[in-house]
Each structure stands twice: as structure tokens, then as C-alpha cells.
Length: 407
Image 1 (cartoon, rainbow, N blue to C red):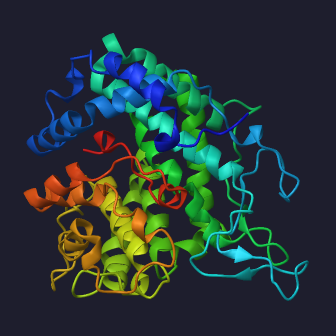
Image 2 (cartoon, one colour):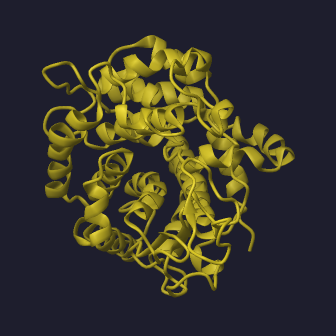
């Protein structure tokens, strides 16, 4: 089975054929009728902006059968059929020792690495939330078939014994001749964050009690692995975007399974460790500015931090509006990055070694910060940017694609 080439590379004729059908539906899900004012405003904004985009994509994905990692066995993996496997992006054969251990070339992705499991997970993260968003947008009367298709993905990945993934990342981002897996590989399941967000709409509604229990069991076991394994705890304690990504995963998986203890722990980690140690006085991320791709990593960490704040809503003080005494918080980070999302050429730091011209794309951080910080220019810019990047490297670092599920 072949993995689809993501939204931007899908058959354009298929999109055109489904556009008319996508624009025909008119009813919003009544479940949002009694939402708080801020949620109503954000939801209405995204629903209006993304309506045709969501329905066009969802109509296309209805015809796609779920594909999990078990569809892509590889002899390179030291694990079994149900173990997720990937190779570290920035490691290449050593020209001085072609058959020896791979060496690092920071910021330069090796296209010969095994990536089929990651592609399958990215496909899941593209298709399943889009189908769920269509159901949320239309409600049961017109949208039930989309929600049911989303449920099929959940069953395949997390419930069905023959196709489910084992709930760990012991063999992620290995390096040939060096390691069979690394803590850095935990970032690969960042693409399950929006899947978990989408699943929270389906569990207890369209997803059967038995399948809901299976999904909850999977994420409970995976969250436990994140919190207790050597790879997981190492990633939690990283000094750059990797710990922010760990926190977003832990927060959203805990939200799905209603683990309020973990959500509170992650909130404490955010305000006492991540925010003070990663955000500079001017709102930049100094550690990301030192990378060979400072522009993309700065945007990436901003988006992940904004997603984390959004995920932690309901835990103590609203994290999207929280700021340290010196003003550092989501609003400060957005203030720093906004001019460079508006004009890439204004970026005053080193240009990325790769993919600089593929950015910016639509930043979920702009949306979340625009709503929280009451900045209409952020929202206007968010609406104007491309929501469906086609560059594979950008897609790899773009975990929130359906903000309708987040506001």
C-alpha cells in the first residue's frame, strides 16, 4: 500500500470534483451553541475560514482506507511488525567510512532514510482530524459518515490487534552503527497530538464504548511510557524544542484520557521550566536561533508552545494568557515572531540551510495568540497564510492542521 503524498500533493482534480459537494452543507454542529464567548468567536472564525478546505479534504479522505505501520514492514528495524521505526533525519553515511557508523549533518535531512512509518503516521494526522473536523462542522445529520471514517482510523491504529501500533517509541530515530533508537525519536509522535484531540470528540459519541476503551488504553500506556521510560524522561528534560514537544504530547494525551494529575504536572513544567528557560526577554527562542535552521525552528517551537497553552486550558490560570513577571509568555513570543511571519525577508538572523523559502505557512500559534492576546493583525495574517504546505520538511514539523478542533 502506498502512502499518499499529503494534502498539497494530492490529485487536484479530485479536490475540484469534491468542491461543489463540500460547499453544499450549511449546518453547524449545535453542540457549540452554548460555548463560552471566546470559544464561540474562535470557532466561528475558523469555521468560516476553513469550511470549504475541511469539507473538500474530508470528501477526498472518505475513499482512503486506514494504513498503519504494519502495512510497511522493514528489515532495517530491530523491532517487530507492530513497532514504530524511523531513522534520525540529520545522519548520513560517512564519506571516509561508507560502511561505518553514520555521522551528523545538522539541519540536512537524509532522503535515503527509512520514513514509511513516519509517513503513515503523518497521513493519519492529516486525514483523521480532517474527517473529524468535517463531522464537528456539520453535525450528525450531514457529517456522520466523516466521523465514522475517522473512527476507522482510530480502530486500525490503536485497537485492532492485527494492525495496532505498540505504545512506545523504542526504535525511533535510530542511527546506523550507533543506536537502535534514541530519545530524540519521541518527537515523531508529535503527529499523534491532533489525532488525540480529534479522538476526544469521537470517544463516547460515534466511537463504540469497546473501541473507546481500547483507544484510552493505548494512550494511557503510551503516556506512561513517555513519563517513565529512559527515552521519555530524557526528552522531557531536553533544553530546546524537544521538551516543548514532549510537554504538548503529554498534555494532550492526558487531556484525552482525563488524567488531570499529569495535566497539572505539565502546566507546572511549562510555567517553571519551559517558559523561563526557553523564551528570551524579547520573545525569541535563543536556543533555536543557534540552530542551522533558526527561522523554521523558531516558528516550530512557537507553534508547539501555543498548542501546549491551548491544550492546558482549564488547568489553573489560562496558559495562553499567562506571563512571567517580566512579561514572557505566549503574547510576548507572538509579538517577536509576528513581523517575520508577515515578511520572511525581514528575518535578521541567519537563513535556514534548507527550506527557508518554503516558509511561512499558516501558523496555529498566530491564531491562538491572536485570540488570547486580542490582536486582530495576528488573526488577519493567520487567515492569509497557506494552510496546506507541500514541502515534506515543513509537513514533518507541522502538527496542528485543524484548528477547528482546538478553539
